[in-house]
Image 1 (cartoon, one colour):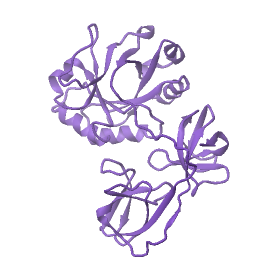
Image 2 (image 1 turned 60 degrees about the vertical axis):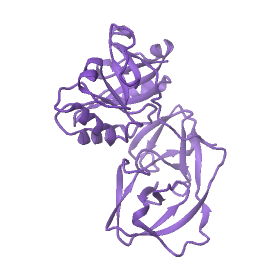
Image 3 (image 1 turned 135 degrees about the vertical axis):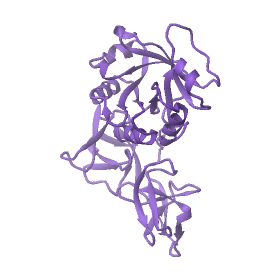
Length: 331
């Protein structure tokens, strides 16, 4: 069992160091609500939670003013710049015509039941949510640990008057950690490059190897693409696209005939952040926009092909970013 807290704008100024000293390890932060609200304290709460060693995730409070897809996309657009440890969460407590349908569509939009969790009250869950196999974080106060119909409870929020009398506290039992890459001892990897031609009229380029990943661009029929063997799967090609690549469905790409002797070094390396906090920027300059922050001992994948003398080009969010080399070490 792991102890956790969750915070919203009502918890501005929360003492994260004190909570960590009391044994709390997980922190969920309210990010968004509906289709337009963003928690104004979110950046500060994220920074302080990370600084004090919490594993951090975000939740979205839904309402019935827009579709599940609109709200999920809004939520994802806000949180994607952050380095997250815990699976994104849907908070559903609102009266609506079909909460089960909304829940399933929202979670599917985030990548499916293995990549996101649901928060709700015990009564609401039993009365209105008819799902199977989803990870449930349930609120139930003034009672012992509740039982769930298919043993799918990953977390139990047992009070809303915890630390200083105004903090939600939870116990966590299930696996809600986002699976992250394990660094290898290899400084570079060997990549086999193939050439292909797009055969569809319009072909989406996605951020990952699956239909659930965001579309980051499109290619038209006849476009030539360079295919990497490193991250291609049985159904998806990993292609060189933009600064950090993308994925396209294999069924809409025809391999070219000139694919012999195309083995080369991909220039992909693993780095570890050595600064206490390091900005990830849109471009390799300190004048560029900040996309997010990563913290000491965090591992990242860097692409030497697009790196500069002073900056690493890193895989981050949908389109990647840049971090200063002097605050990193190659592993």
